[in-house]
Length: 485
Image 1 (cartoon, helix red, strand yellow):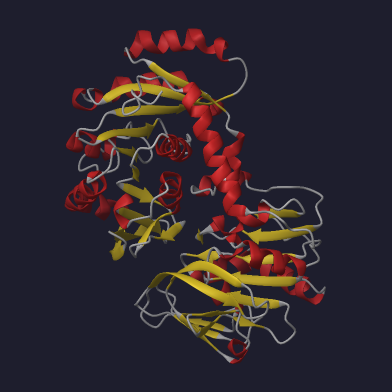
Image 2 (spheres, rainbow, N blue to C red):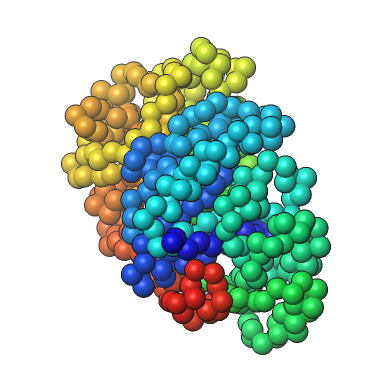
């Protein structure tokens, strides 16, 4: 019989994703057939699963931790925000439609069947499934028809462990408050809690653990310190963009404007892992650094509205000055579309605006089309002649004279475009910097000659390190791990 555990947080960004990944690797290292599962995710950081379709990048990472192919059943419902009030709904990897927040609350009840189908798929043949909640179960105003937290846990009868983030403060109140407001049916699923991101002498929190126990009766199943290795893993939540600037005073500065609907921003993690590269996430209201050697315009869930925001920030003028100074520009996916002359959306797929002037740095035009391209690819860099791999998740077709100078060749067809002077380029390929050979050659063209980082090995090493620490820190009472610790 398959064992299971679900980590739910007292709030968002408490570290559930990293802990699930670490526990997955711990179980895999012990020889178990382990699978990750997140019934509902909300993120524009998506991956292409090995069985086709979109899932959250976090579940892709957790599959890597399990050493198994990623499946759409690891994240059966993915919400991709595309406006302040609505999201694209992806079910079993395929777009189901769009819905506003209130409409989605009604729709959730219909999606529980899809969630349970995927749950059964993940349990089939597995020794252990480790599930991750979303947000917090304490959001009791959303409890009706819930599929993300306790609604799923009670239906599947999965034991729950709460995760509290002590680094942000108020962890005692958040745990005790969660106990106070949850209905009895939900409380019956909770087996205990983990304290995450602790800094300093753990014994100083002994009294805190005792008081939490007095109020809730829950056991503490581990106090996890601040895991520096987590910084070497791809990030999922957009909340981390507030603190993603990495490196200082290095040989190459890479500036990334943070778009309102930025997507797949973990594309830049391999660059940030390079010892001679500084990645600066440029927030709205800030200027693109004048000393940046490369500006990368990232993917976007809403190209036309992000183009408007790009101009409101004055980044278009700063980007023009950057190019006149001899700087390089790369656009990825939506960023590629933004670099062209015009973006057309005749069917209003992204919204009411059906046409927008692009930034005009590439001689191409984009037409949005209803059919979405979702696939993993292997390719060859047209300029460097080295292999690269990545994935495509996009709407739209981009054509124009600069496409005669392609960025890459994918399955015998050209992808992307390069300007006549070679300084501005665009591509639909996400994840291209994760390929060591391509990244090394690309950076060499920007003056970084000593790039020797093996990015995937670094991620794998970080997972093993986190797993090793968790093996020493979590209690043998942790559901599913009784015979492993």
